[in-house]
View (tube, rainbow, N blue to C red):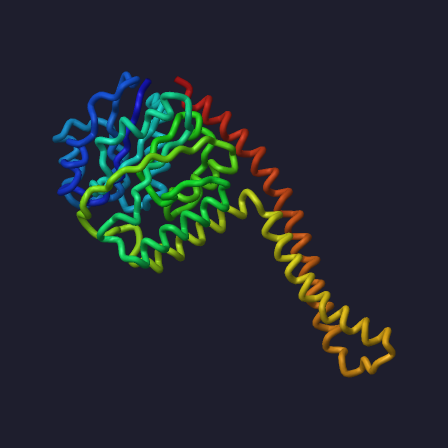
Amino acid sequence: MKVFIQVPCLDEEHTLPAVLASIPTRIDGVDEIEILVIDDGSTDRTLEVARAHGVTHFVHHTRNMGLARSFRDGIDYALAHGADIVVNTDGDNQYPQDRIGDLVQPILAGAADIVIADRQTGTIAHFSPFKKAMQRFGSAIVNAAASTELPDAASGFRAYSRASLLRLNVVTQFSYTMETIIQAGNKRLRIASIPVVTNAKTRESRLFTNIFHHMAKSGAAITRSYLMFKPLVVFVTLAAFFGIIGAIPLIRFVVLWLAGGDTDGHLQSLLLGSIMLVFALLFVALGVLSDLQRMNRVLLEEQLERIKEMQYRR
């Protein structure tokens, strides 16, 4: 059983030593532990520090590619080198690496395909009340989209089984955390959660400029992921909404006409209702087309999974 622990880094020469020093060298049920440093275009001594601490596995980006691409490239490298489990932590030392053993145990026991650390965001001192509320709200939205019950959907401290990684496909350019949960939930993968206590804050996040930027990017990623798996639900809901809006003035016009009243002054109701019903029909058509596209994507992902199995065959 081989575990790869990947550490995405962007100018982390000061915090990386603490991260590497706290990674366990032995885990019950694990034969090999490998550390992979993903250098996402660092301009400091991150690579030299990693080598000085005995790291031999590297993925290097000549320029900053973002967290999602770093995660995906790290996964490709780990699978190509025989990883059975891949753990993702962070180079800023926000996560307690000494809990990696606990993180992989549900996978080793066959009880989970993915394990996500619950940072217990309500107890993090440097999180503002607004940020804590948004973390809870974001997790609730992701859980609704994925049919899961995870307390901390945004946590990047995770462990993935080899089988789950072969089935997941990261397409976003921002952050993989919420997208992979929605994919995993809709693909019926088992996701577990364990509580952890994060380390003290070492620096500001480089993933986003402010909380509103983070909310906008996360919202777009969640919406796109949800549409990938449940497009018919979205478009049928929109069709029903516009259908009801359109039916109200049309029914009013018909009632007035049947009652023998003056309908000349209500032609705008007939026009509005007709336009709304046209919108409803368009959303029904879009729903059917998008659902057919979803079915085609499912077939393509099954082919991609088989290609990955052949590509990463031990």
